[in-house]
Amino acid sequence: MAGSTADALSELKIDDWASAAPNLLKNLSVFSPEQVKLAKILLEANQTHLFEHWPEPGVDDDEKRAFFDQIDRLNGSYPGGLASYIKTARELLADSKAGKNPYDGFTPSVPSGETLTFGEDNFIQFEEAGIREARKAAFVLVAGGLGERLGYNGIKVALPVETTTGTCFLQHYIESILALQDVSCKLAQGEGPTDIPLAIMTSDDTHSRTLDLLEKNAYFGMKPSQVKLLKQEKVACLDDNDARLAVDPHNKYRIQTKPHGHGDVHSLLYSSGLLKEWLAAGRKWALFFQDTNGLLFKAIPAALGVSAIKEYHVNSLAVPRKAKEAIGGITKLSHKDGRTMVINVEYNQLDPLLRATGHSEGDVNCETGFSPFPGNINQLIFEIGPYLEELTKTGGAIKEFVNPKYKDASKTAFKSSTRLECMMQDYPKTLPPSARVGFTVMDTWLAYAPVKNNPEDAAKVPKGNPYHSATSGEMAIYRANSLILRKAGVKIDDPIQQVYNGQEVDVWPRIVWKPKWGIAFSDIKRKIGENCSVTQRSTMAIKGQNIHLENLALDGALIVNAVDSAEVKVGGSVHNAGWTIENVDYKDTSAPEELRIRGFKINKLEQLEGTYDEPGKYTLNP
Ligand code: UTP
Image (cartoon, rainbow, N blue to C red):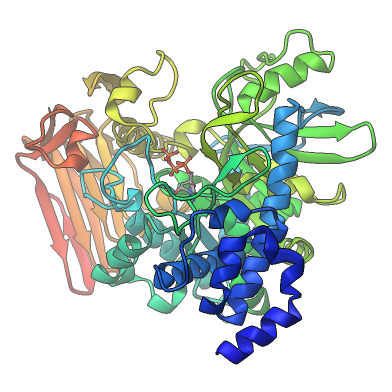
């Protein structure tokens, strides 16, 4: 090893670059040739300070080698390596110091897209097209985020979507993908790919717990080979405008690191070879989604249909947005020099941009009562072919940003170290104008109810704005399911208002179903006959595929469990004490955290329950 290191040193013309760091120079014999090359990269990028405190060889040698193991990871996980990271950081920090506006020279306008209303004819047509395409899809869940705002101790995908059945987000997502797979493959028997893959981006904060959740639950029914976990690495922190890497305050032989953001998903899909594999297997669509939106799959089939019919390379799911609402707007930006792009513009940048480009009133509602710029919910559908082509050019790198907190107006020092960050929705920023980038707007009640905020912060949300809490996330499921069944002809009572954890919410009947019962509206309509009604205090859990409702008057709780080969007709008058909702204070530490953060628990007093484990035709009618 010593010989080869010496060779490497002479090959690397050591005296030309290492003299700036005498403490490193003394230690070079401790390292492998690869590690010496990494040292060269650091010194050439003006990072001599990293070695200032290094003692003589023989002291802490293992720690010094571990330092270069970390440098190797940081270098290998970033497109273009650390040299490129530091160069980009210097440029972005200089722009930030100069107060440069990233949208200088751009004029905003409303891009073209599709606005769908649930249950209308065109919604149903797009949904049917989407179901056909689904077998050619691959799903990508970004689940590397810490969820600091929510403050939940576990991983977010392990939280219940709703507490009537206790189904967690990951189970719900997997069952939804399997349901799509099932209906889509039935439509196109024998053609093309079948098992729909799921890639999950994790991070050091979530990886082992996500794997554990999958393994303990037999991958929730998916084949383990269908699921791929891609772990994102953190990136190096920066101490100053010259992008000097920050030494970890707890270990002088480590660089401090922080998350890079969900934009990492693009480079990981590219570098892992997964995207190539999907394309080679005949897959056409990559669908990106986030960790806690229990409504998303109600919007997925129709949105995928829009991508297919409109031939969108990039399709962003969006919801109607009130002017100035704290949600990014999907915007077309046209530059004086001819560049155009359709991207998400953060709400605090949209208003000044509009004002600076001749819209004196800034971000205002149009005649529909909403902003003409639809609200981005960061669920994206990409056509894999053009996506891979683009990533091959960029190596998966996407536009980053830096957000340093300066000590004072001179902008020369930071309050704490910063780092580059990237967002997955910024992918279209590098696309050529010929790329077909559009959006699909659907009602918020149908498509978007994320769980991001802790009870205390949610309770402070100004009236009329969404709480985005575990409370509102669960109530949104009941509202959406109630509205969908109403549209399918069921008489559903209006909700009542209740306050949980300081948040006033509408409480609809607690209606839930397995995704395989109804992944598309047309499916649901087929399973609902005449004369069905559900009172507000009721609970209905449909846990099976072939369950048909007819002449059902429900006032209480009804639970139906059935294997796929059992066909069950449910009807008659069901009246019992039902399941009630009881307040739980978020400060009550005797209650499980999953319940505390939503502010209520379900009290299972009495129910009618039917369980059908064997194939056959059955009737459940009290
Ligand atoms: P959020 O905006 O919810 O951020 O991320 P977060 O980091 O999870 O939560 P806070 O900001 O600390 O409260 C949106 C989606 O992106 C994923 C999250 O898991 C979530 O699905 N994400 C975020 C990543 O996968 N990696 C990241 O580095 C950041």
